Length: 441
Ligand SMILES: Cc1cc2nc3c(=O)[nH]c(=O)nc-3n(C[C@H](O)[C@H](O)[C@H](O)COP(=O)(O)OP(=O)(O)OC[C@H]3O[C@@H](n4cnc5c(N)ncnc54)[C@H](O)[C@@H]3O)c2cc1C
Image (tube, rainbow, N blue to C red):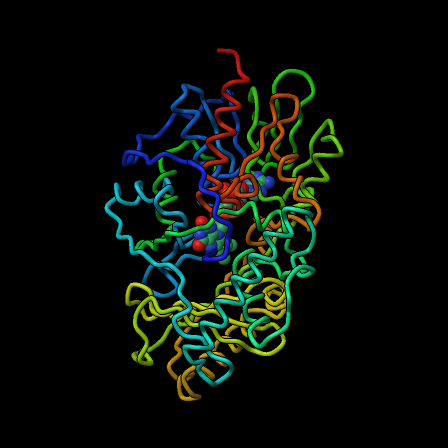
């Protein structure tokens, strides 16, 4: 999701786009030029780009909605809540910013500032917060410096001494890359861009992506279980039949690919399959709490970070857009543990944290909440990809097409915006252009 720590390596990416009206329904060809597996950010961007290039497409989606990990719903809290992506990272280069503006959606700038840091019930003073920031920068620099020499676990190259090391480590690793530092590849870390400036959207990031995908030829509830690519073209098996196309763009997460949810025949080369396994999914979990009337003296959009013993830190985004929500975030191993423990345990944990921040009476202000379930979701199997330390090159291997007719896209191939929704968009567009170029004119 974050933040201040990623390496700055400005590279021109998506040029800003003209606002895009909701299109008339595209045709649903029986045998398209290109089949796209997955209607998330990458799949939608790929379909749009191919249509622009004059190619016919069909998108096959396992879930009953489009958007994938970009998902806004208003039923739980009576207001838009993003289960997945929320921040438009690198907003000045993010294609979704201008799309959102074109749709008349409201955007607010929000860069993480760690406005309030608590150590258990005690609020850290200004000097302590400055010391925390200094520790983060020190660690970030150490990881980046190590990356120039070796791709290894970030934990090996940081100094865990001093009072703020655990907090800085969890902010850098679990809360940002969705893995703890021992599972964070130095090279992956260094390749990620600085993500500022960041924006939030009142109507939800998922709502922007859904609007962008509206009208595309998507078949919902249509999981692809097999891709045959022997002979001419490709044949995609789904419960509703077989779709033939000239080529295919696969945008499902590396977690889904590693789980063998899609069988390839002939089998993919070993180096390709290895790449799926070398890019396992990290986990970021949100635990939003619906608050009655109290605002605890905290202004909308405040960042709160609570350090708890045993690498069980939690970050809260307080009352975004003045909504009655304290949105908790946990990441890395702790989030996987919480996935196993279940929603009740997650809510207990977040309420306990609220009590530590604002006193025990604060918990009586909680009238609802939920736990986002990406870790147990069969269509994602985690939040986003994190290269295994030493295996950063797997991202390049994942990007290579097979037989000039199986192309890959998704956040795992997001380049400097890896792991993000805009990175997925860029990867989708790139795969679309590659698929287009490989087809006869
Ligand atoms: C909790 C959380 C917070 C995040 N916060 C941010 C943020 O603030 N900002 C940001 O930019 N990014 C954030 N991200 C990351 C961002 O959401 C993702 O990088 C992006 O949405 C991924 O898009 P994608 O197209 O690569 O994959 P997906 O969205 O996963 O799309 C792939 C699609 O394939 C479908 N699928 C899977 N298997 C099959 C199959 N066999 N057949 C057919 N379809 C299949 C899936 O259902 C899915 O719809 C966050 C993610 C999470 C989980």
